Length: 247
Image (cartoon, rainbow, N blue to C red):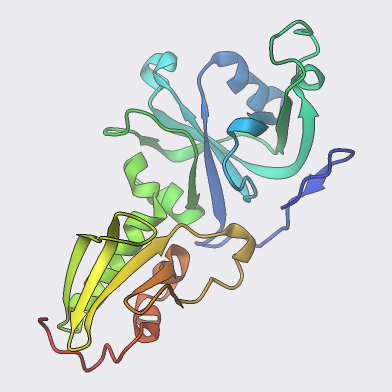
């Protein structure tokens, strides 16, 4: 989504379903939580913003400064529209703040709603932004459950195993986009390195297909994998239905 600095940008509405996109952001003080609850907005410095901020819902992870209510996600709210403003525009009572002239994304929100089941963070020492889905937010028992790439890796690993194929997780590679492939699939034709990518929410309606990067590696969209792991597996280079188990 491109934001217009002279006026609001509106989200592209979708009916809620399991794949409705959610952006998880951090709130570390009572004032910012009050602004989200009472004035219905949240701010993100442009220089520290994630690559994408467009989503249907914003969920707020409260840090340990909130005591017993901290280190967990307690609330979420629908996103209504976006603005690009300076900090001075957002907080006019702080005109002398060192970042008063910096640009911020102002995310206008609907009513802040308590999650039916708060999502704690048992293992995450530091959280910035997480993209997830509404289904995972409502079902998660820990913040680590929200990462789509990890969930997609598990689904594809299980689908490959069900076909009796040889596969390894976190396979080290000499070259490529990342130092480790999410999965390595072995067969008569050699090794296929599989990289799983977090989804691009502007492609929500049509997930990106499998695409090749060289002769022995490919990339897969995490959201496509969560929707249809068997279908994605059928798209992998080579005949995965007939590959023998073992290299």
